[in-house]
Image (cartoon, rainbow, N blue to C red; front, side, top):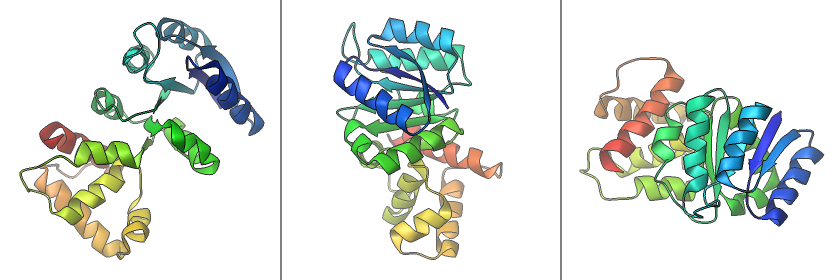
Length: 210
């Protein structure tokens, strides 16, 4: 796939570019600051933009803001945010359209999982780091969802299928389906395309309880 990398650390940026090129991806652009990133993505029209949350000029959330601009101008471009620390401010808006991931940079060291994540995101799915999900879902709630349902919803937010959730939680797939149905009902989500409902479930929960 065609990939643009937005990262101000030259060492990390070039190391990531070499990894992606080594496995057959085409790195069609690089940017060290948020403004350049937006311009490079506009010109290169990649399948995926990998973006550091903290980029110049502000080194706060400029990368995430650039990602939102990219999504608004080029909704077909998948976005994968990378961050040294968990920062969730812009995640809800970006994940609402799919083709979005948010991973901590340490996850890049697990090469196979990282490459699987970028493939899933580029295909329109989601990939949220467990620590990000924990931050988003771990705050006190009204108790509408049970602890087990919050676990299931957290894994849904990571992009797990029902089969994968069943394996992670040592449950049967039918039990997971029951939990998912209960989650949908409690969040007031009517029957719809399943993948769309799963994204809506995560978004609704974050908007209400995040």
